[in-house]
Length: 177
Image 1 (cartoon, rainbow, N blue to C red):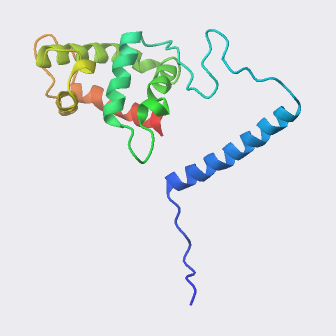
Image 2 (cartoon, one colour; image 1 turned 45 degrees about the vertical axis):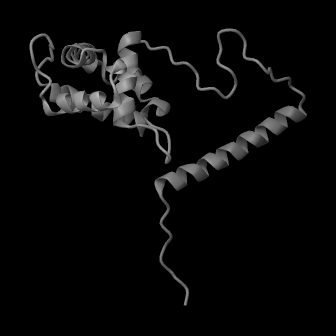
Image 3 (cartoon, one colour; image 1 turned 90 degrees about the vertical axis):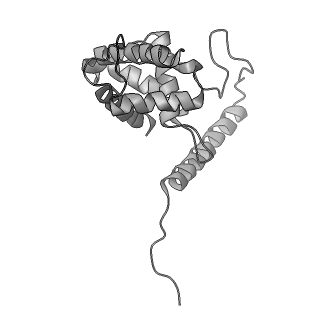
């Protein structure tokens, strides 16, 4: 007796197979280019990323410090694991930066003030910037912000820290997936 139920395919398996098809198409294009004897530089010209490397994104809406903090937070929210890349590899921070110049432009001030308040909270409650904290302290500060407990003199969250966390988490999810 044969099983007539449809096979369920996981999202990850679907993406893997789509990636394999894309790689095969790229390999075909590369072999066509090779047969046309077009030279391919082995080293990228100065100022460009090497072939196959993830290009360096130039942030337009966020400062370098804000972008580094956002990437560190995103890495804690959706870390890479054995099943695939996390938020940083997916480019969630660059997605947010681009969106702050367009569809999320009304959130630009909330990001600027929220990231600054988050940094102040980390320094006042844990004695160091977020990126320098241990994994446990990073997670506990994120929990404090999520639950609205990140208060105190000088933190400066406009409204609830929980509202900032909710906005940030939602955008990181959008940028990752």
